[in-house]
Length: 483
Image (cartoon, rainbow, N blue to C red):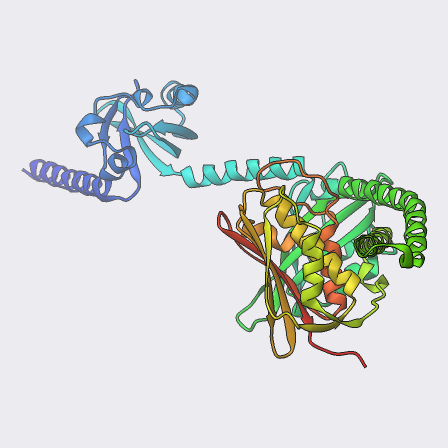
């Protein structure tokens, strides 16, 4: 009697445990299944059905190999061998499965061996790690891109001065193997003595500037001289204090070599041009001295030739001095002159059937105090660019707006426009925008020189563009007068 009672209690407790297991198995949010030794799936929970996109009746009775990605089937055979042949109590693996829609899902698989009524089964839990795998693939692609573009990522903790860096960071500085430790001071021995003060000053100003953007030469561990562009933006805490600097380091050595070759070419070409231009200028001056015997038409042509030669001489001087400190080298010869008449004079140079009509709007008596030759250079360049880069436009408009303290000059075309991300780069030295992947002649100095001329006058220069509709290059001149 006592034995029967104990047997009944055991069976009751067993059923209760079995019910609890089934409830937990069914309701747990972790994908789970029970498999037998031939890898047939005997039981699945709701989470696994949601993971693979099948109802339970379409999974139960199938084999896990039916859902495995072909290149990962071998992993399941290894699980089968470890669990059922070698009787390992549990086994872990990473595997790839097909969902119902044939998309792939990566899972971290843990299988535990257990016995039930003399038969061995595997209780398997599958954690979805697809996000982690995608992140790993993204890291691989990023590291590959960084490697082949000569770029490294760096992150400076502004409190500890410790630097977190990408895999190829140390290689840029000439180290074949990654260094154990890198801090802010680790950069100092590598940066050229001439450029180190610039780098330190940029770091001292990051709270106000919001980041750094410096070009430095470095002395690599393998003794090679190299140019780097070190950039970074600050991240701030809740109080607005910069606590971290995150950015990239680009190898710009090849760019610097190309820039030096351009400088050499410009210098040689400009010097070679000075002699014939000087001869032309002397000849025109002789014609001007003989003006009494010339017709009015000839006098106008000679005067126009003289102004053109003066502009060419100025362009040659600008090219010879078009270095990074070009603005400091500009010497302005300011006079009071009629801006409208200067624009008319420049527009006449483009009077040809081969280019769109150039119209002028604004006050005809608008006077400014500036260097007329250099402002003419700016206008010539902006109109020339409109002709070159907007060949489909039917009209180019030069608009003069007279404000209380300044004059605004705009050159407007209805060409293809310029994408927003390229606009901040257009006034950089040697930069050339190429919207239509076409080859245009030029050295990329025109807008750089224009910007420096305008800023030397105390004015501003900018661009407003709507791709596919219009582009407006504008600049302002302070409305001051000479004594």
